[in-house]
Length: 385
Length: 102
Image 1 (cartoon, one colour):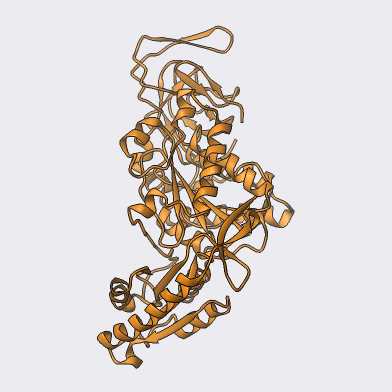
Image 2: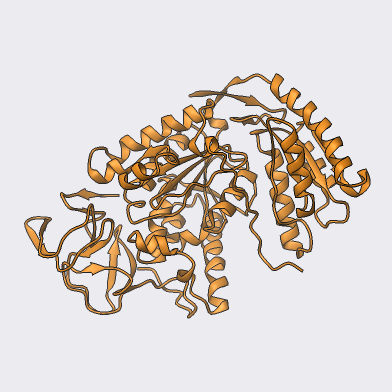
């Protein structure tokens, strides 16, 4: 099976062709925003990190920014740093440049302030846009696709309609040689035995149990109840009673394949097939981890109605029930609620979502793209200092 | 996963002792499931919420998707709404409860 995408110098294939203006630190956010406002077809990705972070957070931030720059949906990157920050912008730029795509770096303190950096950045961004505009789509095999599967604002229907249907999509893509990343470790608590049973080997099995255990222990050690944060109030209103119930529905998105690998947050997969990534249930943070891992498309199920998108990957929204679909049609791409009403089977909706994934790979815009949803949030482990 | 789509409820697994309401179900309505088993709905069940199919004793496991989703904090009669007022999850709690799953 094929799609038309942008072949990058590292052999990866993009389904979009973004020029990204990337701050290496929160201090560069507004300079990046200014450049992106002045140059059509560029995207700035502001965030709150990059400095005053403990080593593990600084490393995770750097890994995320590098991964976002390397994502095959990105044609070229301008990295803007301040100069005194912890997450070094020239290091970020040179790591992204390993992918072979055009990368430039500006440092505000070296260029001499905001206006001068914006002026220099606009010139670079214009050249990058004209480079990206000359690239042509080529036929690529579907095995080059990495699909992220996500759920947010779940209800009790999610585990009966949208999530098992998305599981069908995962199984089809894995069978076609592609990759599926299942994330949201918090929402594996109570369902980890199902994933562990499907681990390809003992090492992967132990890693699955370990990431779930350490997530749960973070709450246990604080003496707190995860259930006060996840499930969220809307999950309870939608009929989800416990974290276990939410998790058992959540993991269905991954389908029934063997689990090949367990990734850290924002880590790119080394294996094809179904892989897990250790991310929190927080959707913007989880999707940011997915795109940093190289995910080109995200399929996102929701029962309460979640509009989130991503700056880099098209996000396909799948409603778990027909009430939501008709109420928030402007945000929803597919209605899996027909499974609940009995009009369609899980298999039929799964195949419908898969066809939509292919159309989106070929360039069809999703509702989240049309509405300009570009939520981006880097997960953090410890406090700021 | 085995799913049974009945007129008013969805049974996600034969082992389940709860089912999901496909639409709001009023009190006093009778629901038939598996081989002429019939229960009377005892209270209003909102869309997507769960009803008990069997008597679940206090401390008993609540089963959905064929898996344990929590524990009854009081005895639950067939036809009752099953939710946070009578069920508690066992995972991710501040008190250590590592052997949470069934």
